[in-house]
Length: 260
View (cartoon, rainbow, N blue to C red):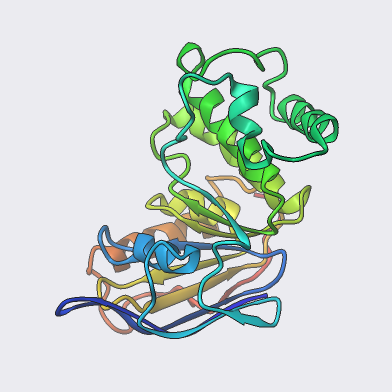
């Protein structure tokens, strides 16, 4: 379980978040949505140790750490593949110094097959599509073998069709590979389709304004009536158009829905 409590980070006189907290169960998938610039990426930077926290506690599997840089894999919006390496060698970067070279290469080949990249192992990043590069970045993320995974807008640079396809690959992180996932996305629909829990954040100082627990089977349909209602509500919240008592949505829990 990931537990963050009373977390604070300021830059000079700007407080990005103060007394911020969240809990993600082991094996869970939590999505964070909020206004641009509200502090979501700074939160990830604090978790990963890129930025030092001012105050607060970060706990993973019952142990407290100053940050989780050695305990997580971080997949960002840009694939960050090295153009002079093949796709396979890019995927192997996290374990390049491993003494078990044969085993790790076999694992990478298995993941290439699982994610539809088999046959492209020796292609350079510049010779494949953006979607294939992101799938390679996903393989690299899995090669870290860390249970906790941070996803920072990993699909935002892709076209809608490719994005929809890769959303199903992201679900494999949880369903097949047992990862605990925290994802940042500006796409409310994407959050509702993928996550077990969606946290709607305010602008800074960033706090959790709404929390939705999505107790629904997956894959989910984007035309599901209840998801559409939640999506419109969340967009209204993010646009500042919701007034107290104006919504018929209960943000606490969304019950299972079948047949749509």
